[in-house]
Image 1 (cartoon, rainbow, N blue to C red):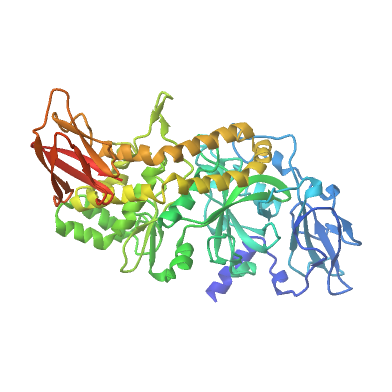
Image 2 (cartoon, rainbow, N blue to C red):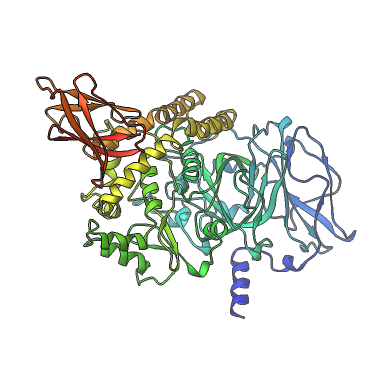
Length: 625
């Protein structure tokens, strides 16, 4: 009984008509929503001749004052919404951008009314994207969201405006769009159409999403499928490379990124993270329309929560835990303490503070708590993409009861750029390994708490060796340019035709030429990244040719097939010199003799990793890739 009452209260609070859910009347459209080339006549009807259809054109729910359908309607530009919601300030003045006009689709929301003009049906919605009217998404799927204006833009209840909760003294973290929870979920209708008009059309819950994206003109959104709205799931194969066809929640992430403003970083990173075997959300670019008005390029994504884990790993939700930061703040699961911290994760981090992972017993204990290989891959990937907004931010990991913690990748908007900006505004190279092992007092982008686990793992020689091996192996295959370039080329080709419209609507990117230049910077990063990243790692682990030996050096470093020995100026080796190559565990892998005539060592049989070569009483560290 309690659950029934809660459901009824929720329906009232969210503005759903309780009566309409008990009715069987419906509106029949002669053509469903989707992509069309030319204008055409549209008919609407209902079952009973005693009833009639009323409809709106601005995304609002029809009522007794709405236009009554009497004869077929020609779908042309006279049916575009006149509401001009693009003129409503939905962010602070410094971020607001007002275009001269916006593109439109035709949105028709219709319902059945009886002789007393009481609504006796659900509201039925169809959005029409007609190329002849300039509504061309250039091959991208389209998402159309319709909701009552007050729910979106009302001062007290609107989820897209600064509104009643905005504080001018704290403009970056306040506003209606920063409110969270079920009470800030608004009833809406969502349509999704592929190029062939396959997709979904259903009532759902709508909320804002993200952090920075909430206060931007182009806001982050998420949609929820619930029984109370009529459909328990969004049923469609949204992502070509993923066979899952049932989704409880989806994110609609805005076209956004940090410098350079290409908007493609997160997509490339997410797709590559999936390639490397990390938990990461599927993603695809779409065009969004809001109450019939063009709202720019977005990315439809899986929401990385317990429902994602349920569908991808077939887990039981009652036995799943998710934490959202290094302190153990619970995103999902229990038991938690009075501060919302998941006790099991917090206990592990507290133990780590005094653990000695150079000791086999402690390292073995950690390997029972976390998936070591997954954690290695997670650190390798985050450092490879040079994620500036990590590790103090954008961390998430999960486990099942009795399982080990695994890490999830999300949000690569601040990645794929080797440079960062110092306090004076000067561009400097981003020290990814320094960032990943930071021990200072700062709280962003890194912190001592956020790097504790990785730093402690590096105390263990086995971890260090395996980490170096995996790093080089990934650089040779999945992270190699011939693989990452495919994601870059794909997303650039998909977005290019739509960039001019995105730029006109929101002012970013400034134009197509700037966008192409920004994309090229990301491409250059990927092109050179495996070599640059390997060199960064070599320097981090102390392979520095100016510090290891006064007698000899080795090259190339990293090496592939052969290792050449070069004597320092003023130094020489005996006619015959014994050498020994060992791995990080001290195991001898190769012995031999160098001669004056032959100072080259074949290493084709050595797997990728870090090694030591010792000769003439001195040792040099090198990498095989």
